[in-house]
Image (cartoon, chains in turn blue, cyan):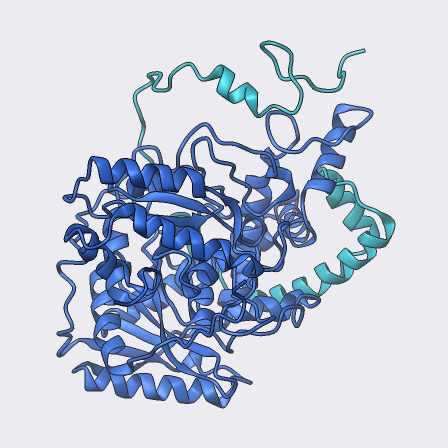
Length: 485
Length: 95
């Protein structure tokens, strides 16, 4: 039989339900492999002992009606977990132990999932390479010294390295889809309002959304079904009828209309990405989809808009870290001095940069010129999508303008780092669902992803198209375990 | 538009982040390159556009004004960097 750790979530659940594998055997396998994979630096906090204990408890009193029966799962360290340290990748939360649980993780435990540990991420999810984490760089299992993407870089790395059967990330401007693309895995950002933000360390509240990351599309549908729920504790949570995403999953997408936006053909885009996209269009046609050329005229304004909206909201959200009630405190001569030193020592460079930008654009006299202007442009970007969806059911684009880059390659140039998110950011600004699926490789053999963007609340169509194309693409990661001790 | 050192220092005061001189210069450079990139939005005329305030067109819900959490004072105080029995302690603010 294949190793437990390389099974898909679907197969693992099946084996556990058929009593071929116990929850404890599964937990042991993932804990053991995780312990031999420290070089990847995926875990910030391990919950291994507890996971083994809880898996035994599950086996003693199994409930196979649950959707994730005794399944060990590691999660991004941006989700607050009751009594388990939650750092958001930041020094300022280095010693923070929440007294409550995020709704998304609670949904996972309610369905039988067991916490394996907390996964590394860019500090406060601000980054595209996991290099801004206080807890150090994460290695991409695809090749040594390659970034795993970000901000959910620990999640994508752990998933691709088979340290967890599935995982969850958060996506503010591409933080699920870009790392999925960089590691040959699947990542889905649901419609804004689908998954509760309660208990997720806030970055940019009007953009943040949690979502599943998995080895294949079916697994994402299973996990989405668990984590997507209406929640009174999140005032922006939306009460809509959620599908049974996994049982309604179908490869029949005959007649579905897929739009190809011409504006995503950006200057300087490598030929490999262009070719991948062309191949993707052929795959979609093979699946029975109808391809239609569309225009999203304001695409090039999305990144500048994002780099006003996200820092502005971040500067406001991160004002709470003042060293008074929790987290790091530096000593100061006065209260103000204490605040200033705490925040200076507690935050890393990228976070400070974004707080500064955000503070500037919200400061007296500049609100209209920046934040208000950006929110108006955001309306135009959303209208582009609304217009397109009069003609098509979904949109197909590349996930990223390049494959994974080397650690250190872009960390000195913030703008070039930001350009990574060029294809993913518009989706957050418009609040839409989007998935990245592995679709090919570049000349270095690094994975490349394609993105499918859907109508609001139409995750099912997005998943169905991805499921159908995945079969035709037939991508397999070839991981060599080079990091194993 | 350029952001000078004086502005950077003023913003760092507003953001309550103390800043070394050397870092302030680097930050001014970074902010200028980011704002250069942001200036692109000025190409667009937006006078008659309504700002997008919420992705989903819903109104914020109200909840009943009831206490829903248990008494978690001790749990909350456990994370405090400095405390006495019942209070968070901060540097002296009143002379």
